[in-house]
Length: 158
Image (cartoon, rainbow, N blue to C red; front, side, top):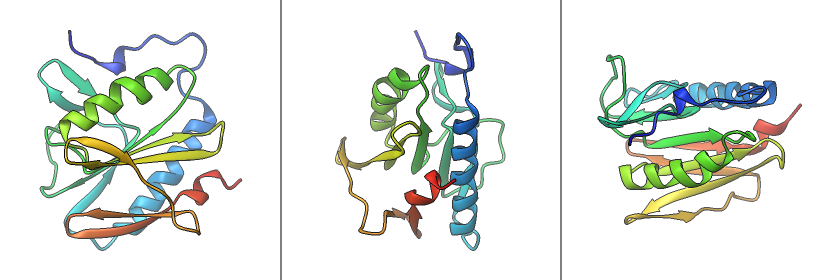
């Protein structure tokens, strides 16, 4: 059976205000960093069809290569951000982690609003390995023709 998290059922709020605030900060920073890129584009949630029966909607992502003009994404993003919430923690940490690793997503970032932290994984071979921020809280991502330095500290500023 395929996974379609768009059909999730939540008790209470599925997406908290804090979640949306962080997603907006990610999107804003990615737009600025990729402003002059003709190769890579940032996207907010859009359907990514991994297989015919498995469709996900990452919170934020970067796709490099071709310009996406279709209704859904069919190639793997190079960089994905998922923002944890009580209702998504298992999905993001276990199920999506495995799906993204198997699909070839080069970088996977799990952002935790409650602990004000982020875990970043880079695909090495067929497995994710944890990455570390530099001393200023920034992480460098090599996105093919683009190299960006993402400031995770900006996500948690009030």
